[in-house]
Image 1 (cartoon, protein in one colour):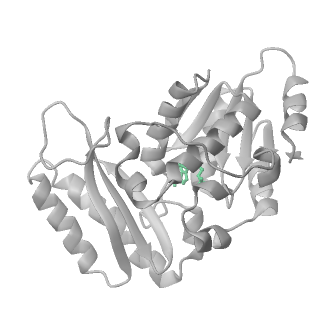
Image 2 (tube, rainbow, N blue to C red):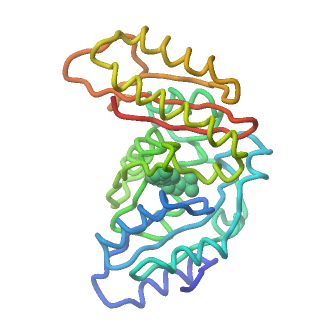
Amino acid sequence: MKVFTNAENLRQALMAQKDKKTIGFVPTMGALHKGHLSLVSQALSENDCAVVSIFVNPTQFDNAGDLKKYPRTLDKDVALLKTLQGTVYVFAPTANELYNNAIVSRHFNYGPIAKEMEGKHRDGHFDGVGTVVSLLLKAVNPNKAYFGQKDFQQLQIVKKLVELEKLSVKIIGCPIVREENGVAMSSRNKRLTKSQFEAATVISKTLKEVKDNFEKMSIPQLNALAKQRFKDNKHIELEYFEIANEATLKTVQRKRKGNKYRGFVAAFAGEVRLIDNMHL
Ligand code: AMP
């Protein structure tokens, strides 16, 4: 498996394939786990080949410590990708290569979907995401690109980005892959101690409890229930729990017939920030 660090070399390798090969693209920040691999498997099953980018994008981090401590395990990532059946190209550029020596965010007008939750709590995050995804999509020029529902708001942002930038790629949302104890798989889980990893089960358990009570209880009651579950857990500090309309991502205080809703959590285990969500 060849690892490309240069977009032009990758483009040439992709073009050297026979005519009409379709490309499925999976952008990642590496430290790959089964969640990422499920996206790559889906990309391989729906296309002739997959491109996986591994790039820790500096412009989407609002916290320098988080960027510095983000796990980087390229050799292990390549070994994991080799276990999959199919043609996989790895694209692992340096920041200067991808950004053409100007490592700054562009600004995007995504509209209201960017103003809630992650948009509210991580300054400039979605501008950084839009900037890197736009650069990557232009470098790879895939037929389809695969994003996890683990980052549900990001998935909606990317769909909006493709519309704004008039890119001809189909964005596919893929289900969340969880650990056996219910914790959503994440590269950041590698930074958790054993007891933090156990304590982090409060996130998915609370989302599930809210889902199970969604018909019976009002939104303010469900919000109060969720907040109480986090108050009862000394190891996990809640940043936000929100119930939002799945289409608009607007957080809501009452349910309306015909709308779909989703619960969203961001919480800290020590310094490590974890997010999760669930359809209700
Ligand atoms: P990341 O490397 O965290 O930027 O993630 C790269 C892609 O993998 C994003 O589209 C994520 O939403 C997706 N992803 C990360 N964790 C999971 C998971 N547990 N299940 C499904 N998709 C995931």
